[in-house]
Structures are given as C-alpha cells and as structure tokens.
Image: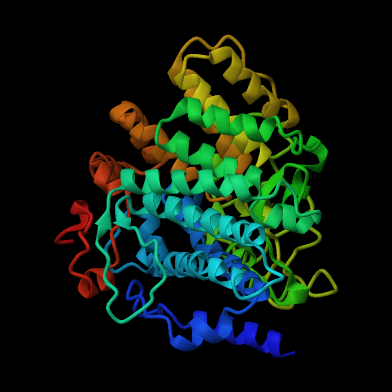
Length: 511
C-alpha cells in the first residue's frame, strides 16, 4: 500500500510541472521527488506509464495537426473559432493550436525516466540494469516521437534533453534547428531499438507500448521525411521481415479501429472506458442532431464531400462507405449535403446502428466519449513508406508491387505501366489518403511531397490544397503557401513573450 501511494503521489507531483501557463519554464525537481520517490523499479514503471498517459492526452491535437490544414476535412456546425481559422488558413501566433505544452510535458516525463531510472538500479536490488535500459528505451521512443511531431509542426524548436534538477538550470531553452533534432532522435532510436523487446507477451502491450518494430516504424518515417531513402527502406524491411505483422482481410478492415489492436497494428495509443480512459475523437467527429437520437457528438469536423467523390471513383473499395466515412442525413446537418461522418472513431463496425459513444442501449448517447484507440503506425504505412522511398530511387516496379498489396486488400485494381516518378508519387499520395484518412497523416504527407528535392513539387503541393476551393480561397492558398515558412505553425505568442531566446517563424512576424 505504501508503494502504491508513493506511485500515485509521484505521478501527481510530476503532473505539476511544467504548468500549463508556463509551457517551457521547466520547474526544478524537488528534493522530495529525487530522494523519496525514486526508490524502486515500480516507481520507474509508474512514470513510464505516466509518459504514455501524457501522450494519450495529445490525441485530439494529433488529429488536428495532421488533418486540419489538409484537404480531407471540412468544418462542421460546431467547430471552434480557432480551428476554423486554421482550416481557412488564417493562422496567427495566438491560436490555441499553436500551443506545444503537452508535447513538452510528455518530453519532460521521458527525460525524468532517463535521469532517474539508472539511479534506481543502485537502490533496488530487484531492479537490474537490463530492466532499466528497457524502460529508458521506451522513454527514448516517446521523446523521439514527440520531437518528430514538433519539427513537422513548427520546424525549429527547443531541444530539451534533461529533466530539471536545480534552480541554476536554464529554464528558457533556445531554438534548435530541425537538422540537429533529426540527428538527435535518430541517435536516440538507435539506442532504443537495441533495448526494446520484440514482444511483451500481451497483445495490448505489444500494440500499446514501444517495441522494436514501433521504433523501426518511427525511424522509417523520420528517414523518409528527411530524404534518407535507403535508410527508410532498411527500417521498413526490419518490420516486414519480422513476420509479426500483415494486412488483415479487406472484409475485416474496420477491425483496425474497433476493437483495434489488429494484426497490422504496430503502435497505437490505448484507451479503455472501464479504466476511465477515453479520448475526444468521438465527441469531435460525431454529428449533432439536437433531437436526442444517436450519434450525439459535437459535429466539429466532417469528411470533405470532394474526397468522398474521389473515393467513390472506385465503388468496390472496401474502405469506402460505412467504413472510412458514413453518409448521414439525420437532423441538424444542413451545411453540406450530403454530410459525411469520419466513421472510424464513431462506429463499432461498418454499419450505422451502433456507435462507440453510446450508452448500453446502443442508441442513446450516454457520455459523448469513446475508447477507440489512436493508431500511430500500422502495417500498410510501412508498405507505402517503403514504396515512396523506392520511387525516389527509381525502383518503380518494386514500389508498385507494394502499393498493389494495399490496393488488392481494398479490392481495387492494381497500378500498372508506371513510367514516371511524379505519376507514382501521386498514386501513393492518393492511396495514403484513402487508407489513413483521419489518422493524422495527411498534412505531413503533403509537406513531404512539397519539400522533397529542394521544393521540386511545391506547385503540386499548393494545387492539391487549392483544388475544390472557391476562386478567392484558392488565391489565398496560392499566395500563402508559396512561402514554405508558412507550411509550419507559428510559436504561440505566450511562449515568445516568456522566452526571449525563442525565434518566431519569420512568416508570422508582425502578424
């Protein structure tokens, strides 16, 4: 009981810094935290669990960062003013979506594990160095994942690698270049992958905790973003050749999302209502009929009707209607007709009759919340990342074979006779949109296309965003995104006001 109370108090203590209003003002660790709590392996495990919990608290932002500036979603009736501005490309440093505090909270949890876990080895005879290294590897994975999000969202950001220790520590870190962060997180993942397990012998842990495959998947994504194509291919092959993952049957495709943890899942953030662990995805995405019927959400975002039209060019696609999206004609939806729910995080299967946020009856909503997991990586992502890297090396045939594995599972015709890099790049981009719609990847896929080879396809990136917009909206997009600095969010104004070492993204200065 004493150990349990100590762990609870430790998590509570860690949650107090850095405070929400002091996002990068890292408070020093107290003597109590250093000496009284970090006594056993259970304490280390508790804080590692706390790091995953912090990551789970980011899911709504991970969705928004990866989707709102893309082309797969349109505003719902009850979208917030800040989110609408983001979707309308009117982005200012004061927007709440520019807050990075939760990512740095997660990083600080990870840094605390990295600092104190080796200390516990000398204090707890039942906690050996191998166990410590395994927990440290999980912390390195989560810290690297956070920094990869940060560089893709903000580009140059502070690189904080130490947990705070004393009053003399520099609480206001300076900006680091994205290339330096890339080198750091690759180094960290190379250490992590040596000490992470292949399996924890429990399915929820194998999917919800860092494994070797999860680390290789993250490495592949990072290498692809930074145009290290052979390294990306090698990392993908580590996952493919493990034999632990594969595409599930197309008829079962929706099981990737409910109940989740499928055979193609590599890493997903776990939620469980019975443990009071819920996410906000249902609440954000379910419609708001205002008549007491299901599904009863907030109607903040809807799948773009233009994307649905593109999807339905292949009517046999198993990922289409009642799976990725559901056409909804219930009360209250009058902005876009027909309206389309992102069904992945609302339904329990490819049918309109049962929703994850419902009460026990399945019809009347009890809490507007869901415990559908948030998938970071699954097997088709590995196949399509490898295909994208192979295209850059001129290996069109091998790339097409990988794309066709995903298309065959979806029951759509294979691609053939591809003779140009641009054509195959566009096919892969479209395939990723259909496979991962709403999984927080679209904006990053577009950024990768636009910045590759010294912005070789910047015009294509811009035209994708301008398609299906009004003339006035398209002109705003073309003007704004012609400057690649605008592809990244500004640092929130509160951070700039607090820390004179931070340098604002030049696009947003004086806005």
